[in-house]
Image (cartoon, rainbow, N blue to C red; front, side, top):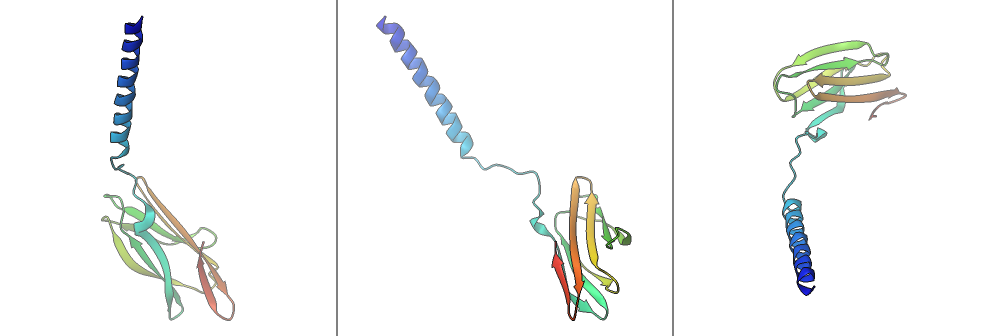
Amino acid sequence: MKSVKFVFLKTMLLLFFSFSTAYLSFSQTDSVNYLKPGAGNTIQFVGFEDDNLVFEVRFAELPVRGCSLQILDESGTSIFEEFITGTSLAKRYKVAREGMKRISFKATGKRFSFNQSFAIITEEKLLVITE
């Protein structure tokens, strides 16, 4: 009877050590993330030029086949559209501020989507904030 207990105990210890070492070896490897974070893609309000709002668009992680960039007004009407080729973009866009209450940037491509909106509040001074 002692030999069955001994074999059972030995088998259990062997299984425990094999699973624990396999878990440790897998948990110590760095995980690979195939989804690109949006940290390299930004749109910022940088100021005024004449009677225009100036936005700086920086895309560092675009799809290989490019994407489409739209600038929309508060009603969702496209006021500008451009197809971007290449995998990155750094460009400034000027938008007439007259009557503008909200402006949205929308970039779409294959497995890529980036949206950012800005509310434009006009009082004695003009404020543009990220939404």
